[in-house]
Image (tube, rainbow, N blue to C red):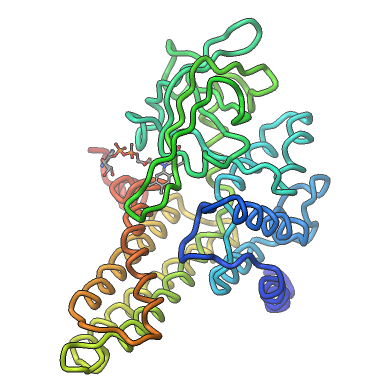
Length: 388
Ligand SMILES: Cc1cc2nc3c(=O)[nH]c(=O)nc-3n(C[C@H](O)[C@H](O)[C@H](O)COP(=O)(O)OP(=O)(O)OC[C@H]3O[C@@H](n4cnc5c(N)ncnc54)[C@H](O)[C@@H]3O)c2cc1C
């Protein structure tokens, strides 16, 4: 445990109050226009510049010598509590992959640009027929004149429409074991042959995209790690921001406070507020119990992460608990809204947040591994069940 976690928390809180780009809408993940994109990039650059982000990087690339995992957790908690724009997972994972597998030239080319938020990255992994079973991906990178020619389709690529760089997985050897024939590439998103088409979601926003690749030319300098070793590059990157999982508990506690606010401002046809009713109180109490359970699960996980003793099922358990509880809270909130007739003025914003959260909540049970996949992992890794 670092000496002064409380001191760090106070420092981050002040920094967020003074510099943060507030979320224009609850859960904003993609800028709505160029002005917002500029503001978000400036905010991310400020976080790197102050040493709050990228502090775990090697010191020669801007990392802090005395960084501790607890700092990452505190940072993420304070960003949530301060309703500030949060750093993009894709950028952090790309940074870790470049640090771990990149050549010196790649590190020099990309890491400073990430720190300056000049480069936003996206992940080009999933394909229309390859999501949970990512190793079945078919996008081809054919050796061609000392480089590669890439052709195929990616989908669900978050932020691809404003990303400067993509971390791409493509098949370089179709003849070998499917995990073995995949290569990771760093790909500038403005190369000829790349067509990015945003997909509009039920929330009304377009946060992810289809990306069509038609004979895109990549050189040897774009290979990340070794040819045919792409599987190792992405799986090691995915474990990089471990302590951030802890912040999910804070997110749920914030939502619980929002649920109480909703119940206190939504009114039934007789003019009473929802919270005056016994059944609503009982519902709130069971929501509180569920959030407490997740908080304990997450705290337990973080404790093990801090002493480097995590179990392989910790991530899946924490993810499943958080995302499914998130859905359950959204369903409770929508139930409250549906059974109410009017809402006080100070409840309008919170009701809007719940409607948005409800539409978004299912996405979290899919991204980063679906709930079914998490249950399968828990069954095998924690309970020792045989593979079906
Ligand atoms: C918000 C969001 C952001 C995303 N961002 C990115 C991104 O930036 N880059 C990127 O590459 N991808 C991204 N994805 C894609 C994501 O990784 C995939 O959606 C995910 O891996 C599931 O793949 P799929 O959609 O193809 O569903 P499928 O794998 O086709 O699954 C369909 C259904 O079958 C179930 N299923 C599949 N296999 C099994 C199994 N073995 N056992 C039990 N049930 C199973 C699944 O749980 C699911 O319910 C994002 C997705 C979301 C929702």
